[in-house]
Figure 1 (cartoon, helix red, strand yellow):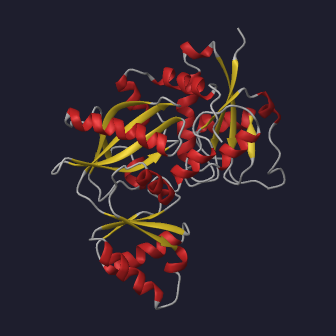
Figure 2 (cartoon, one colour):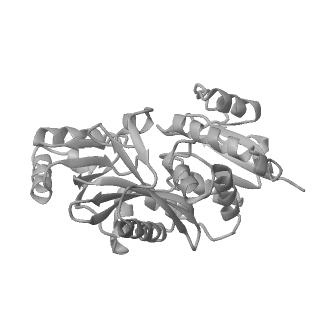
Figure 3 (cartoon, rainbow, N blue to C red):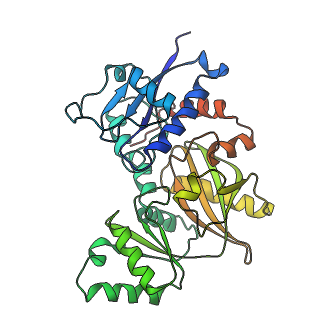
Length: 351
């Protein structure tokens, strides 16, 4: 039996580089599990923070140590390792910009080799929170109120910026969440309760992205649902995240013990069913493929459910919500990885 050569692509040029390495460690372990070792040959390909692609022993060194390589010279930036030509299917696990925003997906599409996850459109739509919210609105999915802001409005003259803040305050009630449109893992996100905090948060978000979203805060439980499939996706059980911090920021997400996951979430069956249906609707609305995690707000006092966002390359560590949700649904980690590779080979149009 000829083994399928799987190119595990990890690292990347984003602030979530280290998280990608941890996700890759878990996926590599699953691909080397007993039920998969006869089917797949693993080829590790690591992208340094400066964009240099590495394979072979160098990539294995990073995976084993869990530590990024220091930046090198840029002389071979566009020269891929020779092992790249051997790949039968790619498994990109690159979180954040330059990894799940359609850029790498476009490159892999040009390589004419199947890959796990969404294509260019689904990745780009899901990464840009404003574009994503437009797609959700078109699909009729309920969302909390928000205001779109551009960097040019924030970094403008002394007359424009105060008027922008006046408009936000007239539209939304405090507290707000100010977010860069194109960053993941809550990078650059701030919760604000006053005019001075709003001004500071807008200035900070503008340093990360030229497109910004200001979103109304809501008193709600944060629940998540995993989706698996292509044209006929299925939804997992629903999980809930609880934490003691002010909101689910980067430190809370990636510091052990700072957040608790409850799977399945202790919520009514009708709410679970609603969330699962909305998750697959969101998946279709952005033209996602393969996998996604969809996040929601459940307002227990009113029974309302609002969609928050979709993540087309969610964290994939052994303790991440996405694989845990599927494990609770009956698909253990090694089988989940196997199914994702099968979905990548289905040959659906991803571009």
